[in-house]
Image 1 (tube, rainbow, N blue to C red):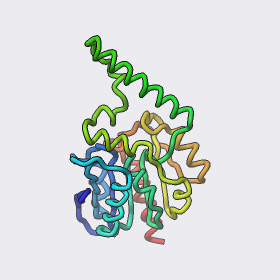
Image 2 (cartoon, one colour; image 1 turned 90 degrees about the vertical axis):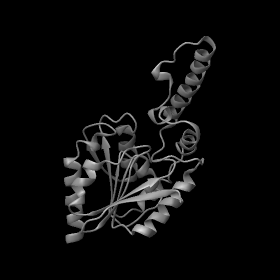
Image 3 (cartoon, rainbow, N blue to C red; image 1 turned 120 degrees about the vertical axis):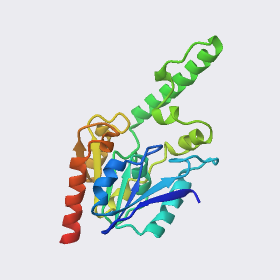
Image 4 (cartoon, rainbow, N blue to C red; image 1 turned 90 degrees about the horizontal axis):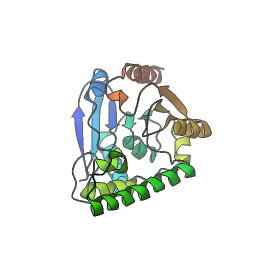
Length: 232
């Protein structure tokens, strides 16, 4: 099995939560929801814990589908990579994706990234030849730097995979949260895509991981939204 589920049972409806790539479980965030809901955290092998296999996006999609059948969630929440996987499967269930990596960057941004990759490889070769320490900025993205071996190969397999844009129109109750100082998922990208697709985007102050520690507004927004959905 390519995934595991950690449960925080309680009374109330079931929330399925998927963390971002190589992210810790946001305990403080989940604890504030656990009073009202049962929480099920879905962790993928190769994305959240060690794997000896090289995986691709289809492996993660299949694991997600299996987990949906097992958990039968009433509500779905995902952060970053978790939001990407969720976006492949439109649903009528209330869905909240936080700083999701589910939208492809504009072509000019992709060219910049490819140039940086070429530059980083070149600098690594120069570093090896002349035994010069490599500066941190030439080591790649945080996800790339924090991976190695098969984990890095898995990351390279999935980083440029994105769900079809038409998928987002098929969600019935979807909210997207973006952060104004997010270097990983630029707010401008989210704003552009959400405007084009007429999606509900809520902008918060902070960076990619702010919701781990400063999440009161986010929690209240989700709770109020769910109360309106289930009490009307």
